[in-house]
Length: 168
Image (cartoon, rainbow, N blue to C red; front, side):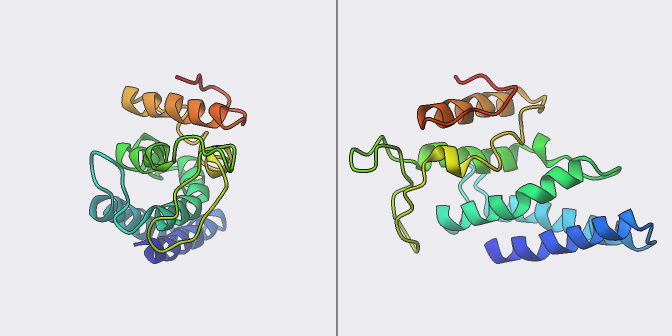
């Protein structure tokens, strides 16, 4: 679950650093980390909605944790491109639907304080700041539709959508 994301992120990060130094064991660490993330997407993300099984707070933590990793893997020879993975894209897209309508008190959409976390008044522009541009180069039309929805949500919140995306 979310705490496992910390483990496979660090396993993969370690593997990527070993690869940068030419260490012969690098590939084993990278493959183990990729396999662990791939397994988590299968086990903990509802296939159609992208909802992470724990809560939207933990899902947000997981996305923030793996985003740097996904970026690094995309640039690694032999690394899996999770920006083309519909399961991961739907996990990010889930946050569009988790936000409330514009809340008069906060002047923006918020993620309602449901479950095991408190009120977070950050809007979509802040939430998507680190991951909104991850999928802009994806070739899958379904992922491109999600990119346009994320761009719309960021723009609606007063933010600047990622380059190469057009709000829908």
